[in-house]
Length: 111
Length: 111
Image 1 (spheres, each protein chain N blue to C red):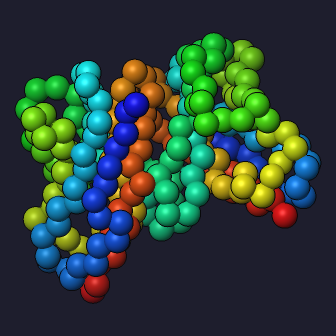
Image 2 (tube, each protein chain N blue to C red; image 1 turned 45 degrees about the vertical axis):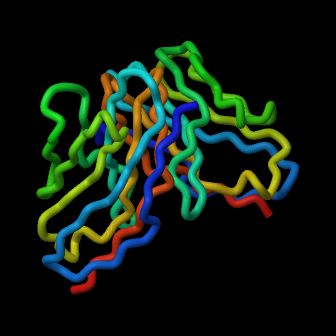
């Protein structure tokens, strides 16, 4: 399968715990994006990478969120001290040009 | 700041009806415009895109969209919808290398 892969598909955690999600983009794509989507809303931009460089991070993103792409391949998104408001679908997308290819997302539920 | 506005949150049509979904964006520079679709249980996928040239662009499954620069609009159309078009549709703009999405329009086609 050459699509964008995200793990885990679902994550249930207690408030205050840390969680980490992984995204494996399409191998030749140099850009990788993270989005968050809640019910009834469109994907909300969080951050993106060009190779291993993080080029932009949304101002709406709190310091509890951090993302890495250490070798310009897979990426991780970590949320520290989770809050109930963090419950959402976290989407990863990759691009080799202008078109985004999305993964299936990680559904986070914070209890 | 860049933004995308979709006028209709929920649209219900009968099969064979014509469809037009509105999209307006806010960005002063050169834009690339997209419509993405999310079928039930599936991930987001590209329906069509506009980069330059002919403002009337054709996408998959009989969809088309018209870019009207003076109106900052990129409306999606289909002359005759099918039950299988039931999905959520997202308009998006690529501005400054960030792809910003609208809140989406949920389309429900009655058989």
